[in-house]
Image (cartoon, rainbow, N blue to C red; front, side, top):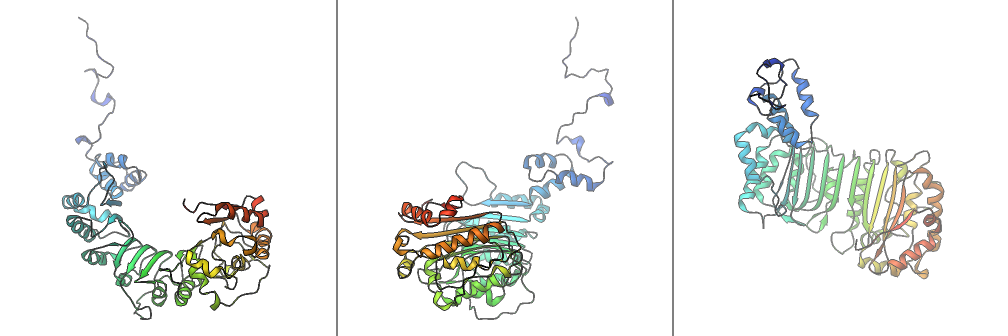
Length: 456
């Protein structure tokens, strides 16, 4: 009887060298890398797969050499969620500690560490202890991101001691929704280049206290949003200690008061110092403010004369203060490319503004500092206003005319992108849109006038 073979069966007559080369990943025969290639080339091949988790997992099973290279990429960035979504399987801190005990060399591969949903009131004690142990076990972390569960989530004291040992090597630090944070962490952040803090509460520190600074800070990118020391902003403390003073390339700062009270004048000037100290290096600037806080300081500022000799373009928006001088001078910022200023409206500020017409003079005074001969990338204005302030008898019509002429004649030709958005406050959207289109007709015709929903 004649015998038949399938196409995938190898005939016995085939020699071993002539058989097709099929080798299963993880096969014991592939325990060594080919010897005809230098180690650096093998490493380059594996590095090309960075970000492709499944491919790296397969590489780690190929041979001992590839396992080392793949593990360096697989564990380069690692994240833990202490409150994961239902029906999701994530690596826990306890499981990761078991991995480190079995393979201690992995600890040296971790450069970026993210831990989410920290909260001493809710997080089980086992996870709290595991968090502390993980922070102590990773000596090579340069990017640390810690986020609380909600605004001002309480952290536990042992974790701060574990973090102290890791601050010296950090290049990037992100703290969101955390309290209380120890102020002495800044004594160990001399190599830090990126600082991002939002909803962070510090222990009390005297902003006038001068501390020894063995070396200047290297911070290039900084974001400060709702960062406080008790009921005060962090700005005076930063200025007195030289944190973020000079050398910033990007700055995002929220100048709104911590409480419903007006922003104290020393805090306003401290925030202003953070901006102006880096005028020569800033490339991107984002400033948020509030009617309540900004209006209280306008009487202390020296008004500047209005001229139409604009010199450059930038992104601006803030409060409508008829007597306030500009927060900065764009002509002193040679590297500035992007500007975004966002105004936050508070109801308590409306009673103060009711004594003055709604004006765009304060914004125009910033536009007047634009130097000629430059073209910036982006200019964006966000203004939050209440419908009660935009009736015909409450508007400074001349300030609107001047602002529009300034934008059309001196700003549009010096920026790649310009936009102004109005945030209708409460239930006055239709009235605000109608009035802004009426008194800024050219910007509306050029499709540069936009609105967005207060509740969106």
